[in-house]
Length: 599
Image (tube, rainbow, N blue to C red; front, side, top):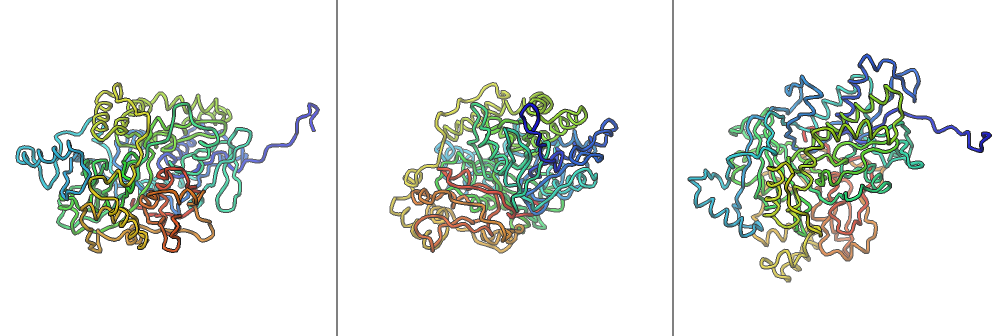
């Protein structure tokens, strides 16, 4: 005991100087910049405090079983990536290409089953009536220009998995950082208001570090627990999401689409769903959709809508005869700057999508995430060189100040209110995005006081299906242990999906063909229903409908209404977490999920 009465006990020894949770584009940007910076002459005298005499010890833990895991249809202007890697050659990265042609395409409804508002039905009629003048072809209209805020001219098309793998290899070959896949992090170690490291999910072991870099994505366990512990800044909320689902397709031999082609689509398969198609080298394309949280369908889904999307005549003329090469899904946090948490605190900093960096106005997130990582790395290098601790004050001055002074901050502010209109309706949503985009965010629609939420079944299908039809469909779906959306879409006139065994396959076959799903037996279920009674009171079981892998279902052996969870089908998209209307789902850290290096 010291003379002043304070304990002389030494703090626990450090296991690393810098520890990263999650390896995505943000952590890739951080580790790339950090390892490059540590090789500068001015950093030669910087030693590790964890292992004196050696360079700073840097370790990264990634949940997935490979650093090539990543699900994103990536087209990016790549400003931050090119600033970090000026001599970047896309030929060195599989499936990477330069953007050569970019279009914004309005897709008409070719099946007559979408829930189009009257103004959009009128727009379809006018497009068909004036098809020769407007250049309508195959039920699609290429608009005459791509808005400046949306364009990706001069940028790149990437496979995020291949890009992550390429960066990770360069980082590890430097010998200055270690990346450990198949190592999920259960949560942060918080002691006396300071983050001291993390706790691993496998055995609960603690790993301590001077700086914990949190880049574990929008539904990561570390980020969510920090939000619960420290709260969010005043006025900030994470209430806008989307689930993105994509196919990677081997194009047929007669396809005329050229490498570097980029299509952004609106209008189909539902008016609220945005889509994309990007063409990689080697006659490979990525095609996908985004299903937003403000879509008021009580049985919103992704996979079946994706199948109808690729069969739209405008796309199908190029994709027919193609083969599914890979498939995947992930949640996207679309609250942007309004969902920004505390970016730094004592012993930790937040980067990437979990830090609110995604820009919903420009439809861009990978480059923004990379930039946040690079900015934190420059801050860490500065603090290491000056021998300063990773305190909240120092990280605010070195990292947050860099972020606030960059183009990321300016563009985040411009996009902050861009989606407000969608809380009022579809037309105000498009108008609000255009207003914010064309004025750089200076003008925007006000936000609705009450968030737009899924409607009741009878309300949503009023005028299309009777209560008795809905109830019969529900009973049939429960008896067959299948999601309700298929039965209701059939009743509303959506044509059946005719499987060809190549590109159009069942949801479960997509799991087998699209990658590899791994769920190690030694881990408990990572999706847990906290209070089963709340599930019994739920009308729609939206978690069942939105589940990207059909891992959550109403089981015949459990007819009371509490969903069953099949961990061997879970792709770790996290959509169940934000779709539960009463926050009754616990999404824990675990390995596994759908992994493909080509996503």
